[in-house]
Image (cartoon, rainbow, N blue to C red; front, side, top):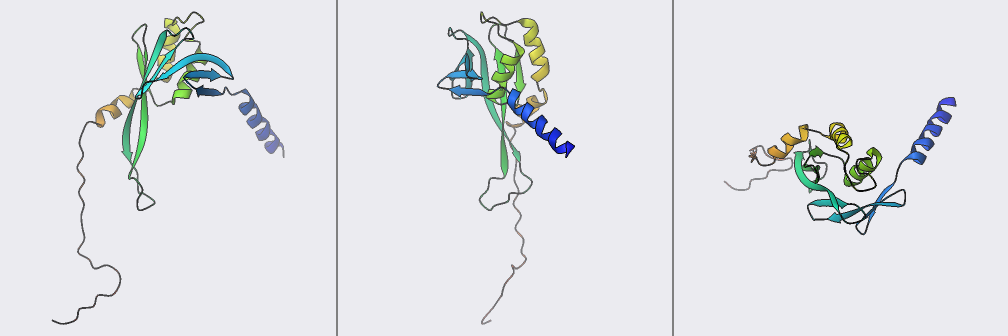
Length: 168
C-alpha cells in the first residue's frame, strides 16, 4: 500500500510541475505565457523574440531506418526519424538533436539561453550545446545520401494448396 501511495504522489508531483509548451498561430506559449515567436519555414522553424528579431533557426531533416518486420501487408518497411539542426544566428554555433520542436523551445526557455533583451548568453549557449548535442546523428545525415540495393529472391517451391495437372 505504501508503494502505491508513493508512486501516486510521485506521478502527481511530476505532472503538476511540468511545463506545458503550446505553439499556436506562430507564437510559443510556456504555461500560457507568450515567450517567443515561431515562424514555420516548411523545412523547419525560425524562433524570434517578441520584437521580431530572429535568434535561432531550426532545420528539420529526416532519415529512414528499416523495421525488423512489418506487421501488416501494406505497412511501410521503414521508420521515419527526424533530426533537428539548431543554429544560433548571432554567434553561428549549432547543434544536432532528435528532440522535438516543443522540447527544444522548452529547454531553451528553461536554460535561460535568451535573456529579456533577446541577447544570447555565450556561456549558456555552450552549456546548452554540450547538454543537448548528439554528434552520432551526423553519421545518420550522411547515410541518407548512399544508395542501397534491395535483392528480391523468389522461391520455386510450390505454395500450400492443391496442384492439379490434367492432361499430359
